[in-house]
Amino acid sequence: MKIDLISILPEFFDSLNLSLIGRAQQDGLLQIQRHNLRDFTFDKHRSVDSPPAGGGAGMVMKPEPWALALDHVLEQRSDDAAHTPAAEAAGTGAAADAIDSPVLIIPTPSGEVFTQQTAQQLAQRKHLIFAPARFEGIDERFTEWAETRCQVRRLSIGDYVLNGGESAVVVMVEAITRLIPGVLGNEASLEEESHSDGLLEYPVYTKPAQWRGQEIPEVLLSGNHAKIQAWRRSQAEERTQRIRPDLWQKHQSC
Ligand SMILES: C[S@@+](CC[C@H](N)C(=O)[O-])C[C@H]1O[C@@H](n2cnc3c(N)ncnc32)[C@H](O)[C@@H]1O
Image 1 (cartoon, rainbow, N blue to C red):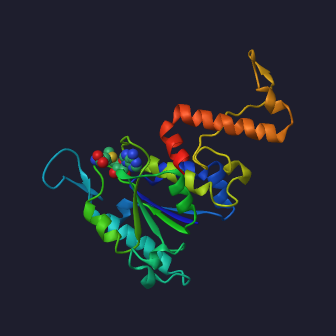
Image 2: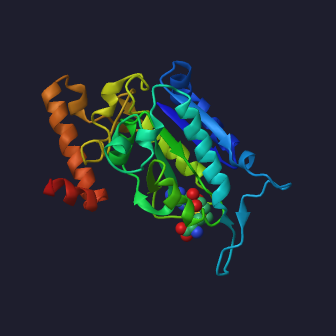
Image 3: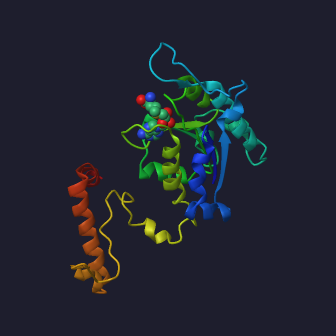
């Protein structure tokens, strides 16, 4: 998978060079390229923001640097003969849905909520481009224009407001890329995780068997695989009902 990150704070993404995602890059499973949005400005101050039309607090990011940066990323793509930008030019339709056509992700608290299902969908794609904003966000006309160039998804990582979209990008990149075959050491660990089947994960334990007066549930030491599976399932169900009744209700109706 190729990931392009466009930001005024590209150094924010240093953490993506660590641990499993860092190794996935070294192993060639993942290629992450950062772009400084200010490289697509032409004034002395390399400015990317301007006061909001209609007045009000804060500043809004100008559309032109974002458009130039997106064009640059898409042009780099078309240098690769395997891609046919003409076919991808329209942001909708079968061409845009093809797994190797790019998806532009604009993090925003006013977007659709990013879930495990979204991560699973995006993990199938070959090229993701992230456009995290700062200030009050990006001039809306950029999104409309970008939709004529590629598929666009406006995604929120939760019902709260961050100072900027970079941390949201790190969250999404981590959730998406760990689903790419080969990125995790042990892929079996993906199977029973929270949210993989609509339930929260059961509680987990390790050695020592006794710790500060607490014991590991006996069934886990029984060696009886079927009993362990049944216990884990009931714990997952109990936990989901108690902590996330919204998920439990959804799970019941499926
Ligand atoms: C200060 S926020 C702007 C909030 C915007 N004025 C609003 O009320 O919707 C700046 C940027 O942080 C990012 N951001 C903030 N909260 C986010 C969230 N929950 N999910 C994804 N991105 C978020 C977005 O890129 C956003 O444009």
